[in-house]
Amino acid sequence: MERKTIDYGIDLGTTNSEIAVLRGTVTDIIKNNIEADITPSAVYIDKRGGMQVGQRAKNMLEHENTVDDVYTEFKRRMGLDFRYEFKTAGRFMTPEELSAEVLKSLRGDVQQRTGEDVQSAVITVPASFANNQTTATKKAGALAGFLTCPLLQEPVAAALAYGFQAEMTKEYWLVYDFGGGTFDAAVIRAEEGSISVVNHGGDNYLGGSDIDWAITDNLVVPELMKNFNLPGFERRNEKKWKAAHARVKRAVEEAKIQLSRSETANLDICNIKDADGKEIEIDLKLTRGAVVKIV
Image (tube, rainbow, N blue to C red; front, side):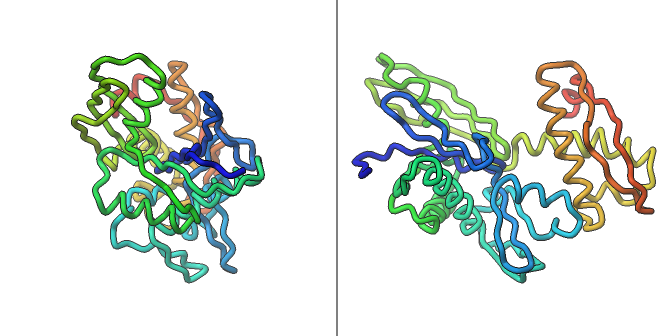
């Protein structure tokens, strides 16, 4: 089907990404090959150069022999002169190239589900993105094979979704977007069918992932170090403990989500090994009150 309008939109997120299509006045999210609405923004390259993107790539963070060959949250370095090293494969990739692989994965999901080869899509970006970051995002779109990929600021996208087909004279809205890795707040003016950003601010290093790490570093790690043989476990980037930290952070994220509905949550299905190689089954309860105090 040859489209005359750009009907696909992509949220290229720091932690997760998704693609949706507008059908008339209804938006449909295209599920990926594991039937999920969102795809983790993660890329893994094995020793033979084979690449995986999404949930399977993210899972590799939890294995000691693959933790150095998978990267996430590369959106935070978009537009910077930085390269990620996949040590086992001996390959380097820029944030734009890694983002392009996520975009390719989303395009592939559409083709698998609908048979359509998406040529154009709107990509949302934080309102606080500078010129070098928006340029890098457009480059990622081009690398992913999109012929056209206009960018739309995330708070404007939210305002458009809220005010779609609404009767507007002149209104001002405060829109905030607290994502997995970035925070945006914007004052939006809606007037006579037009929506524009009056002012905005944000932090590209503040999001749900940072809350996960705050809980991990301040509540979970001290408790584990007090009860088990885990020397140096407070240093999350130390190679010996990177995979263990990834397992703990994943369990913390799941518990954090549960705390939005209940006062307590347990860290479930989270086993790590201590300095002697002895397996530890973590049995730790988090409370909403304790989490609120540190975030």
